[in-house]
Image (cartoon, rainbow, N blue to C red; front, side, top):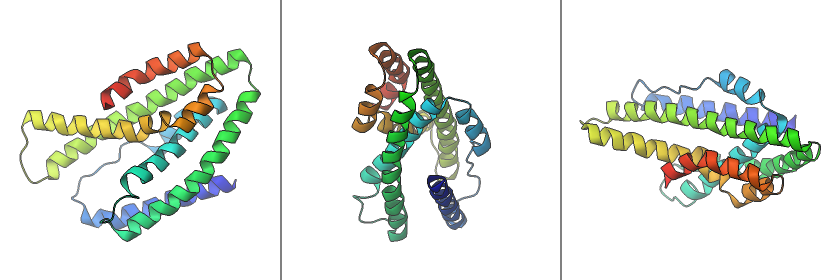
Length: 208
């Protein structure tokens, strides 16, 4: 319950920042995924799969801060401060998520775990669908408001760059985190690992 309270606090905080940023942005930006639809799709999966996705999210949010915010010295101090404290809380959440995932796994038999692996693959695929949808919308928004003309090749390059960046941020940086790999690897067998790798290969290959 305390974790839920903290996550709701995070949502409220980032919505406030959206409100603060909006007046300085050109009109027409759209965030396409509907939170209720996303939540319904996620919660339809098993607890094991949801905890796996949750740990991935906790880890990629930390990777985002460490790689793109913490080293920067010329970004808005308030922006950096918000993400610093978000990172600190997510670090705590990741520890608890790992413990809960392992605890949930201990209660599964081999068939339940095998089904849960497929559900985790499905959730990652759903995240990739969201990423593709938003990258397309954001690329179109950038082209529209950039204040210059782009030819078709440049438009495609903008879209491809955004999609690769979003896939790295919202999928690959989490699933390739050594901690995630260690926890997941301790629970699954070689065949299940191969299924996961096969599902991730097109996404990872598009990033590198």
